[in-house]
Amino acid sequence: MHRTAMVYRLNIFGKVRWCFWAIALICTGCFLFSIAPNRLSEVWFKLFSIAMVLVGIYLAARAFYYRVILDAESVTVIEPFRPYSLKRIEVKGRRRFNHWSWVPFEMSFLESKNPKEKRLTILDDVAFNKEWDEWFLHLPNLDSPSKPKILFKKKGQNRRKRLER
Image (cartoon, rainbow, N blue to C red):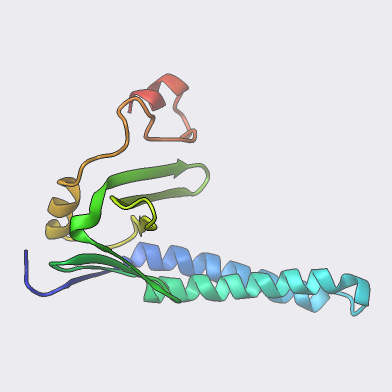
């Protein structure tokens, strides 16, 4: 392990995907806000459109601020508003979540030995290197073999094939 911390950021595909959703939400929110009537009974409509814009701004910030830092002592995930950290000796194992619907979405979780601590969520759009892969794959896999890895239907697959994965 290197003595310096390794910083991993979202790859270009991840940045484009998060920015796409951010732009879609911001544009939709601005459009809805502009067509909302100025009556008091339609305040919820304007609040909803403002919330869409704020979520879009958060997703855009996440695309550029999200990073994972692996150093000798801990693993840290930095999000736009707050960093989440877990000491390496406190990592119990790893879990995977695959969601294949019309938008493929995959992520990993680092579970803590301490049940009071929050688990770290790591997006798969991060550009990891060989050092990360070696460390991550040596963690115990907490997903039981009987539990299906793919939780939702992937186009063109039947249930038996999904459960065999």
